[in-house]
Image (cartoon, rainbow, N blue to C red; front, side):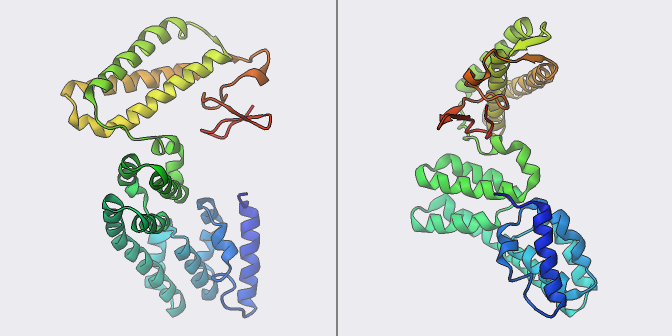
Amino acid sequence: MTVSNFEYLDRFLRDVDRILDGYPGAISEDRWLTNNYDPAKLDVLRPYLGFEDPRVSAELILVLTDVRERRVRKEIESLGRSSGDKVGMACLGYLTALDEDDEAIPRLFDILDHEHGPEFFRAARRMAGIARSEDVPHLRRIYGQVGGSMRDEIRIVIERVIARNPELEATRDLILSMPVYPNEAEFEKFLDTSVEYLDVRYRENILPRKDVKFSTYNNVVRALRRMRTRLYNEADNLQYYGPDKDDRYHELSALLKWANDDLATKHVLEPETKARSRTCPRCGGMLVCYKGIWMCPDCGGDL
């Protein structure tokens, strides 16, 4: 269960009091702070980087080093230039750790690209703790090339990167979708089918309506979601296709945006028996029943 910012700040402030009472390590050695850290916690911790007592600032920097919080790098570089020895040493440790991670990442990718067995899994576990948002495209290529437990391990790596970078959360479903290998004939078939669905069937059957049935709405959402995912995965493949595919890619992207915008204006009619619906009201995915509760494995929604 995720710890609230209030609970996290309360625990941190109790550790601050212990530091001020003369107990060194109260913050930096509190594994609860590290284990329950997530990107949202930075908002409550950031003000204490400039705390009046340097012991607090220094130990907070050690915690941010442990969790590899890169969003404060510029602030810590500035603190390192303007602070005393205690804070300055903590800043140096933070910057050194990130630099060492950056140096290790290419070596880890070389292992993930070419090795199997224990070496692969050791590299993946290390990568999970240090990979950056800019490493996601390379990780996704590996994700599509391996299978079984190796793919599961790379999925964990990608999920950890998303967890450390809140800006990636909006495209989480796309990032974790399965990459598509270049196949121009299949892509052209997808384009033909999708354009016909949006430019003909949607325009004729959905566009004129103000109200749409719950089941119809879910079917359309699911279709749009599949198109969005396929376009995301084909973006890197356009370099291998003919020049017309780039134009058609952008044509479908524009149609998809138009349909999404229009669908958002519709009034959705609730089903007569909502409990019988087997599609997720949030994302349009298929629901799975477990112990009488219908849950969506894609987004976590339920009925």
